[in-house]
Image (cartoon, rainbow, N blue to C red; front, side, top):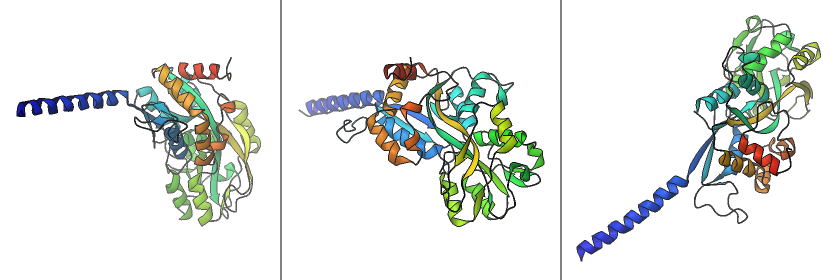
Length: 334
């Protein structure tokens, strides 16, 4: 009798183990490289990760449950930004990531700022997301009124590995400056804002969708300005690099800060050609379903600008086969 009970218990445990094993096999983890936690990539990445996830046991879509990909657990990972994310995708460290369209194109082709590097030919696009604006931030009484005024100043260009670092150098170059003309710092997010408030730097660059959290906080605590990136320098930049476009940050975006003309570039979502076609197809489908629309609209101020109608805007890196299949089925691509 005891042996029979033991045998039954063993059989039940084995069955549970097999069910658990099957559930484990159904699980798929998918990482999204974003940026610093104080900027726009990270919170938007969190909203998207939540939207495309559907762990085993979730309630069904339409019944208050997730409308993501069956068995998928996606996570937004903080990173150094665009260059870091592209490198992590190509090396297999991350499944996907956000990057500026310019950085991704140069990496894919081995041109521009990536001249001399091996082209990242396995890089693929999932979707164009939103417009990012280059913010050049200084204290209101700094006397810095143009990019040219940065000469001799202490300026944070963000960390090497970030898209901000790449673009800050291009903007200075278009205005006749180099990193040697300033005392360059490599501060990110809240650290750069704090350094400006404490007088340790005179200005810093941020490339992010507005409003970006660290600047909202900074503007509420100190009198700041956004320095215009316009005139001949901006014209030279946009003419040389088609990814950049002149664009305004509206008045009221940051407390006490006037409308400012600057340049903008697209934020896009990338993955590797080696990722499974069916998985990326389902992720793209989940990104653009009606339930995700609701999450994007309330999840972040930039969410409302992330739409299927703009999903292919400015795409310079080929679409992943799975994403391409979805867009063709949705009638967004011929």
